Every structure is written in C-alpha cells, then in structure tokens.
Image (cartoon, rainbow, N blue to C red):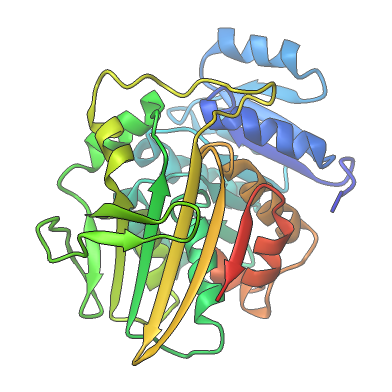
Length: 344
C-alpha cells in the first residue's frame, strides 16, 4: 500500500548501518518520504549523495537538539542504531517531544525487557505507538505466535524454534551479544527468570520441510519478552539449531556479504512457533532469506499501517506494544511479500 510522501515522512536514525540499507530501499519503494540521521558527518554526506530524495541530518544521542532536528516534520521515527542500550532511551524521548510514533529493530533481549518495564505504563494512553524489537527476533515470532494462538485465551506453552542455514553476524550483532551476556531471561512458571542453558530442552527439533530434524539449543530472545507481554502462557521458550550458533561463536566468521544486487545475503531461515493447550497443538511457520534484510518489510509494513490507521482497536490508545497487540497478525504476515508463512 503506497502513501503520499508529501503527507508522511519517516525518520531513520542509524541510517548507514547494515540493516538501514534495506529500510531505506523499502520505504523509498513504498513512496514514503525519508529523513536520514547518523552521527558520522562523512558517512552522512555519502548517504546524501546516494539518496538525493531524502533529507539528511547529522545527529547523536548525546545531543538531544540534534535528534529533535532529525525527527522534526516526521510522523514516525525508526531507530536502527545499535548498541540499542545507548540509543533507545534518547530516541524514545525525542519521539515523545515531537509527538510521533517510534519503532526500533533491536534483537537485544535485555534492551527489549528494559524498554517494556520502563515505558509501558508511562506511555499508556499516549495516542502514540512505540514498538520495540520489530525484526526477525522479537516482532516476527510475536506475530506468528499471535496467529497461532488465534481464538485461545491462554495456552500451556509457546515454543519458538529458529533454523538458519548459516549466520554471518554483523559487527553490531557481535557487540549486542557481548552486552547481553549474563543478562538474558526466559519465561517459566509465568515469570521472567534468569536464563539457564542447562535447562532440559529437546535434543532435536522437527522443523517444517525442507529443513527437517535438527539438533537445537535453548536461547534467551527478544520475542520471549514481546510474546509474554500480551499472550497468556506460563512457558515461553526459544531454540535455535546448532550450526548458526557455531558460526556466531567463531570469531573468524565473516560479516554478511551480498549475493544479489539488492544487497541480500544467500542465508536462508525458517521459524516454527508451536502453541500447545492440553493435547491441542497449533503451529505457525515462516521462511525467507537473510535475517537482517527481512526486518525492512516488517518495519515498513508496520509503519504504513500505523500512519494510515490500519491498527486493531487495542492499538489506538498507543503505548509500548508488541506487534501482535496492534495488528491483525494473519493479515500482516500475508502482506509481507518477503516471507512465506503457514498456519496448521
């Protein structure tokens, strides 16, 4: 769905980062006006030359006035700048001062937890929507879990299983992992408890075709936070197959490289979300290419829906929300051309 770029502008902070490239291209394709921001004047000058249709501002979280200049005239700001523990607070405050909506793309579980615990009540009924962790981790599994839950008021267990054929992490991913070490949690007994990877987990996960059965390890992920904020289940667990985790642990694994002109890598991924209630079981699965690139259509679809009023009634009051609270999950997932998904 296109919107009038003369009527709506989105600001992107961290605009020269790896994922921001995909965000810029996706928003421009949809006809959304753009203002781009980042702290490095040289890199911002290069962005201005590469994207003459966009306004460009040098901005830093240490100078609130520069953030205010970045978001001036925008209807929504996307925070794509890590480490998100440093940037989410200042960008949320800038959005509040400007009276605009906010989305970030962090996959950092401690940051997502902090943002919900710090801002959920103060931002309630603000009329502005603040959506943290709207990406491959956090937002996408949350939408899948919401679709799988369907008309159930509660479930016994929600399990999220990720399968990647490989993982070439960005420098930002490595920094985020180092910052999150020892701070992760999981949902057990209806509470957030410290993550312990020695907890009993399935040795293997039978992923949807064509991936099949894979050895997995437990994770502490952003989606455990987003899901637990609005779906009732005492256990919310996350797993990943072992091969990409070995890539992530290896300091010699290179950063992602483009395999096509659009900048995407050749990496493939699959997510299974299984919701159980007694003997009943529902599964939502999604598959696609490049866990960084898929963030762009998710964020752009959310932004366009917010700016054109295509939210659920529960989203009209605003506040710090998970995407499954704000959007019709099945319709949203079906609108993202970059993924294929199913519900069974």
